[in-house]
Length: 169
Image (cartoon, rainbow, N blue to C red; front, top):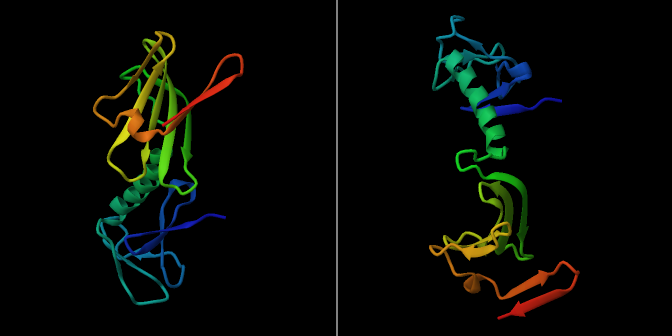
């Protein structure tokens, strides 16, 4: 079953990437007042109400496809090849009250693997960023953001032999 999209006051059915305008009241296909594609006004065979588009009919159909594609593009993962840091894995967690977040991103860069951990309060402009680079044996945090001790009150580590240790504030 396909879906209808409401854009600019008109319903749109998009089978096979060919947008068709649909009357929001009668669910019949709308027709442009003239068929050369330059019309901005559509009509329904059931009602006399004209539907005016902000663009010409052909421009609006292209706009509909761009809107559909933008939703798909928004959810795609971005590979940052400029900096040569390619994401390998990502995990996100939120607290039970949904007030705080932690995101871990493992990337592969010129210097090797890098684990970046972002954490903070949701909606706040400040967060902390931790960088763990095991190949060069470096751990750091972003000096421009919050110090990790301002965000974390407990840190737990699991070692190669399976033992765990934790530090609490």
